[in-house]
Image (tube, rainbow, N blue to C red; front, side, top):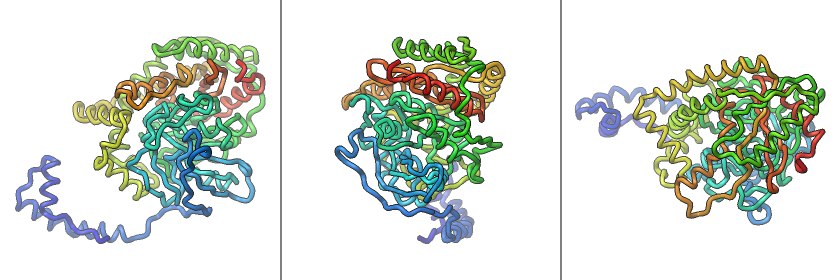
Amino acid sequence: MTIQGPKASELQELGRSLGFGLTDEEAQEYSELLAPLAAMADAQQKMPDYLPAVKYPRTTGYRPEGEENRYNAWYYKSRVEGAADGPLKGKTVALKDNIMLAGVPMMNGTSILEGYIPEVDATIVTRLLDAGATILGKAHCENYCLSGSSHSNATGPCHNPHRMGYSAGGSSSGSAALVAAGDVDMAIGGDQGGSIRMPASFCGIYGMKPTHGLVPYTGVLGIEAGIDHVGPMTANVADNALMLEAIAGADGIDGRQRDVVTHPYSEMLEGGVSGLRIAVIEDGFDHPGSEAESDAVVRAACAKFSELGAEVETISFPLHREAAVMYFPALAEGLAREMMLQGGVFYGLPGMYVGGALERSNRWMERGHELPPTVRAFTLLGAWYMEALGGRIYAKGMNLQRKAKDGFARLMESYDLLLMPTTPLVAQAMPGPDASITEYCMHAWNMLANCPTYNYTGQPSMSVPCGMVDGLPAGLMITGRWWDEPTIYKAAAAFEANYDWRSL
């Protein structure tokens, strides 16, 4: 397609939307002035794009139905065999459906992207395959990844394998459900406010949100660059560490990655917790929406670390809750700017920009009526912040992010790990088709109390299954120092080895 220069009438219409108020003569003059620059764009678009090569063959695959997709946890199935050997040989993997797998459809939970087929693999996809993994396809995720429940995907709800009709958590809903159901050994999730850890908690699996920047986000649709994370979701601690080891490290493309520190995680699970200083954060319990039974199970799990030899102390740390007040307004404005108005990319940040995804994402307003209340609510709020306060909300949120990090850095001088509930409640029944906007959204947000703080600070944070409440899993969240995933894994491995969480 040849790019023609802008017509005077087009510039006049654009000028009106931008507040320029161009006369006919001015519009014509600008049209002639800009024609040579438009010709440069035409020449640029005819150059081959500079994208990484796709190394492993695959087919487009198919959307599974019936018993093959009994929890509606799959979006698309396509078997991609990795290298002939490697640390992940024999392991099967599902990818959250905001992760690019070349040649296989990706919809990010929304009908607006349905039918889009990426032309490139995300860095983590290549790394998994290089390590010998077999990718089985794309896992259901929430609409634009903006729900902590599992009822907003355009293809319908994703069910919890522990109880049909109940939330699998979100937004990495299918990733958690497929691991919990035993359909795959491992899955990749994404986390901007708990979207790895919350579904891990609801489904009774292990979900690690690594330190911000540890795992490259290249080739993954984002929400807000300052809090975008991807990480492993598995049925046991050893697999989680093995998977992180395969995907961690700078890729030379993702501009989020600075001074990255990696470890041989799979070799650092032993040693237990004896001598570790652990703080149970009282502010993580007894939220207005907390379930007493769930809080009690997590408190009992925290006490187990004393039995295992750790120095455990319960403390009050108000910054844990204050950080959420700092975080959420900035998140709303940031996602409205970046995800909804900029096609899911942070302009000016070095990285890999996939034109096809950008073009599809940037045309969402043509079909905005298809968006669910969760996406509309955050977009409206963020756009209102932008209109009413002209950028002050985002600016203040980014400035306060440094304050939050500094506060937690001082706390981590005294403690090796922090403990609290991953979610304030266990999985809930999903809202019905006639739910009001308020009911629909509150079911998507009522589990957000604890996780977002550690997206804001960027610390590593893991959900570990720690007990049951009326047949549904409860999760313990373990948070550590930046780049110190190994200490989290040691604590999780010690708990896993000494206690059967299903009987707690």
